Image 1 (spheres, rainbow over the protein chains, first blue to last red):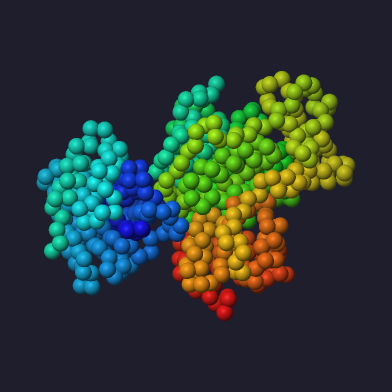
Image 2 (image 1 turned 90 degrees about the horizontal axis):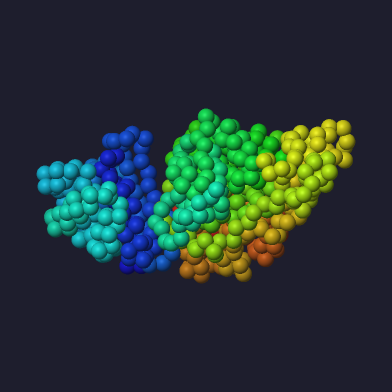
Amino acid sequence: MPQTDLTIAGVGGQGSILAGVILGSAAVTYDHKYATQTQAYSSELRGGFAATWVIISDEPIEFPRVTHPDILVAQAQDSITRFVDVLKPDGILIVDDDMVREIPDKIKRIFKVPATSIARNQMKAPVTANMVMLGALCQVTAVVSRQALESAIVQAVPKGKDRLNLEAFNWGFEKVQAP
Amino acid sequence: MQDKRNRVLTGTHFEMGNWACTEGAIAAGCTFAAGYPITPASEVANHLAARLPRVGGTFLQSEDEISAVCAAIGASWAGCKAMTVTSGPGISLMQENIGFAVATETPLVIVDVQRLGPSTGVPSVGLAGDIVQVARGSHGDYQIIALCPESPQEMFDLTVQAFNLAETYRVPVFLMADGFIGHMREQIVIPPEGELAIKQRKIPAGSTSPLERRDFQDVDVAPMPVFGRGLQAHVTSSCHDEHGMRNLSDPAVMHQYVMRPIEKIRKHRDEFVQVQADHPEAKTALVSYGTVSRSARAAARLARRQGLDVGTLRLLTCWPFPDKEIRRLAAKVDNLLVVENNTGQLYPYIKAEAAHACRVAFLGPQTLGQIHDPEFILSHIKEMIA
């Protein structure tokens, strides 16, 4: 794929933006591709909307905005409300099954992973839900290599927390499924 | 003393434009920065505060933007490469002292990570709303230099250039970034230190009395005395003669006081005014600057794919205004579409240079603050050509 446009969205505190930063960093630093990452968030510390847009390409990226993503990663129902209408007709939707209840019928390519309950119950660390989503994304698409993503995670998370985050990533990689 | 270690972070990075700006400043030799936090520029101040002390520099968080620009002016006269960083509301507060910096020919870099205004507006949304205010916002006649980056990489490259120009021409130089690229992460390549061309200001030697010196204000940029190095100097923002001494009675001195700082920039403009043309032979050209140039280039590419003859011209320098470059373009094209992420700030200037020779129109974005969708530009190109 010469260029892939992604949106990762959730509510503040879920780590959607960090997931986008890690994805871009993996593409540029370890897969030696080009990436542009932008973001928007409301002024609340937690609970407001948060989204990041990532473009990954084999060539330098000209237009840096994502208008119609190929992939939407939704960590909250609010993310569906805001972004599902601009997803490309054949686009891929990856959702946190614990947080997203309703998906419009027109979306055909849906992948689900219970990221919040995995982070809470298996990892005992709710903050790792974004890593579970990255693992799911990695399984579903080949936009960035697994090795690159794992290296970028280790680089991005606090020292001593890399095993925890990589494990959460692996849960997402293993547990994601098409319904 | 400046610690050379870790001054230039050579390598490939995936970081924000605001990070790149900071690293550009440090690579250029910045040793003093002052600022007051403001979205979307705060990351520059934060990162400067973390980095400058580690390379022998100083960061001052001031009580407001007026104090910040004044501290940077003072530091520049003390021999530092100095900067301040803010967004539009901060520039509004700084205007009086930007004039002071111009009148005293103070080398200074002012980073403006623009946001949607007027007034407090929207802190986190980028909009190129300060383009005219940085050139004309302070009272009186004067000439500054302003550069328009389109990417995090250029927030590094053009920050280095901004320092070089400030030191070479003794003038405030503005970096006109915006919230979109300030907060955008992309690949940033920082070259080895030896490959960066870094300019230093000229400092006068020998005689120290301000009355003996003849070089204070010179059309070819006078050497700058630096406080604390045994050179005496008189510095006033009031009208002054070539010795720097106040003179409010001689009309010839008044004329020179205004004209020389303008002429020193205009006379040398060919040495630094930069534009970038893509498909320069095309009969329709999109003229833009800053972040939105990327939309323009993408639109021109889409148009060419559909068989339309469309090129682009990007203004990396917006002040001094690239008048010659616009005239040269206007002489070659039939249609010129000005694409800006505002309501048309440079459009009147571009039209004034081009309208005698070709058709000129303006296109703002569908939604202010969201740079143009290339398809949207393309539809307007088609209308213009039809």
